[in-house]
Length: 296
Image (cartoon, rainbow, N blue to C red; front, side):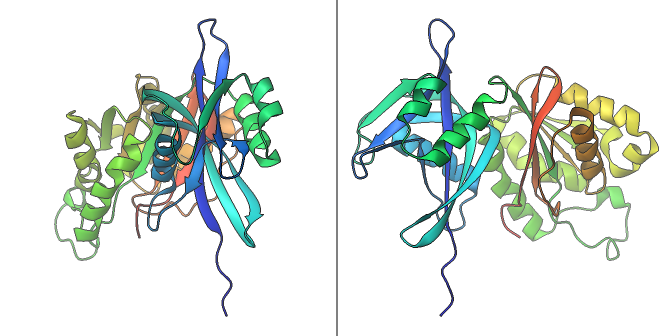
């Protein structure tokens, strides 16, 4: 008999500032277990972990949130199986708490108070990671274009090569994933496949796509310094920008950002329609995460 795989879950450190600008985090009490924990829950089949985190926070706390920095993956055993939980920092954009069957009490606490109240050591470690980083961060989402037709079978100008059917499905599936981080503006390298990858997002947001000729693979390697400056300008433009480009340029930019600011890069195969989540504070990278393609 094949051993069952790990239970996958996702959650968040939900935070706000009080009237004195003191940092507070949300803890939930679950009557079924009589414990205090960070809000979290199981990932549904085929559900991206980001969407599971947003959904579970809403179900347990009543709050709608935007995700920020990816904080940690905790691992422990429950019911004889391993459980892996992904956590993000999360900012409230609406809603309110109402007691429910899963959670009968929500308590806002300072990080020091929360560390005393939390039941599980793994939650305390997530909280420690959260407090080690700046609370106010901005996000840049860098997306590798979705699946396009074969270069060899396309007879025209390669800049005009479009997405194939699976790529169009990936582009649609990316919309809720990118909106989970509060996507606000959309940029794309001047390749049809890049523009088509983020067109569903631009349509959903009701915003135009800004063409970025300096951020194709060819333009990047011809003038990497100018391309890097443009990436930083986009990152500093406010809101949560989304930038779609190609598979050679993006890993180079990620390595440059990581080396420049001394952060670790997560393991990644950089597949088509995958997303790099760059968290920044005061113009410097504080964390980088990688999200697999919605399906592949």
